[in-house]
Image 1: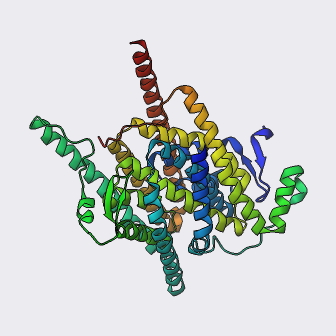
Image 2: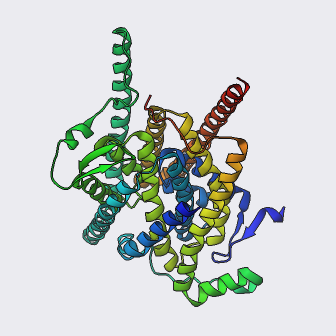
Image 3: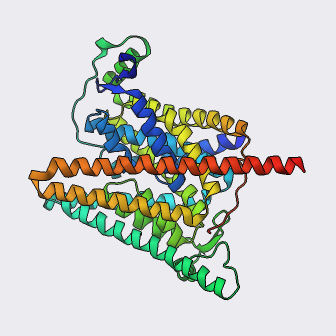
Amino acid sequence: MRKVWIKLTVLLSFLFIVMPGKALAAGGGGELIVIVADTRRFTGAMAWWTDMYNDSHLLFALATIIIIPVVGVIMGVIADVVMSRIGIDLKHRELAEH
Amino acid sequence: MDWLYVLMPISGVDIFWPGLIILGLGVGIIGAFFGMGGAWMVTPGLNILGFPMAFAIGTDIAHMAGKSLISTLRHGKFGNVDYKLGVVMIAGTVVGFEIGAQMIMWLERIGRVDVTVRYMYLVLLGFITWLVFSDVIKRLRMEKEARKAGKEVDKLARGIEWHKTFHKIKIPPMMHFKMAGVTCTMWLPIFISLLTGWLAGILGIGGGLLRMPALLYFVGCPTHVAVGTDLFEVAISGLYGTASYTYKGRTELVAAMIMLIGASVGAQIGAVATKYVKGYGIRIFFGFAVVVCAVSIICKLIAAANPDVRVLFDTLATVLILGMVAAMSTYIFALFVRGVKKELADKKARQGK
C-alpha cells in the first residue's frame, strides 16, 4: 500500500509541475462558450455538484482532478482484490516476445 | 425503463448508463492491452449515446486518466512500467506537444488545415502499420530459418532492430533503464518523446498510438514494458487534459465515474491478459487497431470531400471503430479467460504433486 501512495504522490507532483504547459498545449480545451447547468432538476449531492459548476469552474476542475485519480485507485484496488481472489499470480510474468 | 437512464447534471441530457459501463469496459480492456488512452475510440461512442460533442471529449479524457492510472498500477506490479524512462520522457512530451499545438494554431491562422492534418495522420498510421507488420514478417522469417538450421531464436529477439543503431549514439549523459533493459544516451528518449509529442500536438491526439511503437522500435523497450510505460505517460497527460477541459466546463464527471466502473474491470482484464500473450501477439493486435483507425480516417476524408455521402461515411467510420472495440475486447477477454484457466489448472497440478 505504501508503494501505491508513493506512486500516487509522484503522479500528482508531476500533475502540478507540468499542468500549465499541458493545458496551454491542449489549445485551451475547446472554445469559450458559457454553459449553465440547470440546478432545478437536482437535489442533494447532484444539486451541490451543479451549483459548484455554476459558481466556480476552478473549484469544479480542482474537485474533478482530485476525484478522478482517487476513484481510479479505489476501483483499481477493489478490482485487484477480486482478481487475486480468483487465484491469479498478479506479481510475476514471463517477458517473451514470441 | 426509466431506471436505465441517468440525467447528467451539467449537460442536462439523459444517458443510457449501461452503455457507458459497456463502453468503459471495452475501451478499458483494449487500452490496458495496447498501452493507449483510446480517445479516438471513446469519443464516437459517447456521441452515439447522446453526449453533446462539447462534453464528449472532456468526459472521455477524464475517464481515460482514471483508467490509465488503474492500468499503470497493475502493469507496474508486473514490472511492465519503467518509471524512470517515463519521467525522462515527460519533459520532451510536454515541450513537443506545446510546439505542435502552437504550430497548428499558427497554421490555422493562415488557412484551413483540417484536411492536411488528416492526411498527415493517415501517412503516419500507414508508416506505423508498415513498421509493425514488416517487423512481424521479419521475425517469422528468422524463426523459419532458425528452424531449418535446427536452432532456436532468442525469446527477446525482434524482426526490426533500429533501436540498436540509436543505442550506438554515446552522447553523455548515458542512462540505464532497468525495467526496459535499455542503456542509451538520455537524449534518445527525450528526442523521441519530443517528436511524438510534437506530432500528437499537431494531430490533436493524446499520443499513445504514436508513443507505443516509438518505444518499441526507437528506444528498444520490450513490448510489455512499452505498453506499461506508455500507460504511465497517458495517465499523466490525461490528468492535465482533464484539468484543461474541466476548467472550460466541458467534463461530465458523473458519466466519467460510471465509465470508470466498467473501465476499472476492463483495465485489469486487459493488463492481466498481456501476461498470457507474447510480445508479438500484442504487436499484431496493435497493428490491426491502427489499420481500423486509418480506415475510419479515410471514411472521414471521403465524408468531408463529398457532402452527398457525408452521413453514410461518417456513420461507417463510427460503426468501424465501435465494431473493432467490440470484437477486440471480446477476443482479449477470451484470451484472458483461457490464460487464467490454464494458470489455475497448472497451479492445481503443482499442488497435487
